[in-house]
Amino acid sequence: MQQDVRDVAAVRGASETQVEVTSGVVELSIRPDRSALARYGLDFFDVQETVAAAAPGEVISEVIDGQRRYNVALRLPDRYRSDPMRCAAFCCERQVAEQVALDQVASIEVTRGPENIEREENQRRVVAICNVRGCDLGSFVAEVRARLRAIWSRSD
Image 1 (tube, helix red, strand yellow):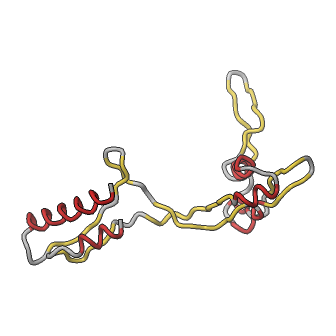
Image 2 (cartoon, rainbow, N blue to C red):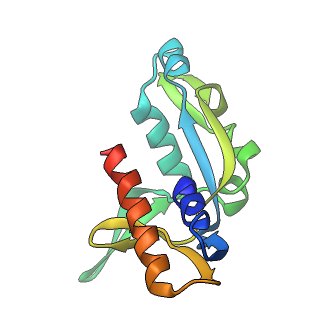
Image 3 (cartoon, rainbow, N blue to C red):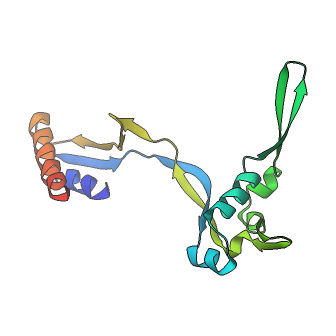
């Protein structure tokens, strides 16, 4: 995408070219390390189960009140779920009475993710924005389309 924006900026008449801002939401990224998992005899499911129980919570029971049913979930307090250092101490169960800290089998970091993901005709869409100066809009658009078609046809 960045190359496409540079190609638009190179067209005669392009001014103040930029990409629509789509990032900004803070995310906690947990990436399992395959070799570390293998060393401890764990798999992705073990890490997934640990993170799922810690973050959104895990349903452990059900309460029935007349005709109504309510799930009972076990969930860690926010202070444990939002701090990467505290998340690192979550334990994955290896075998009976043996546990491995999450940070020994996965990298844990705070990242910035997309605030929203725009789609058009079931494909992701990112908008390049620019002003046009010193040439007519029709010629500018025709040249941008031609450049982008040439680039996209080479990548197919």
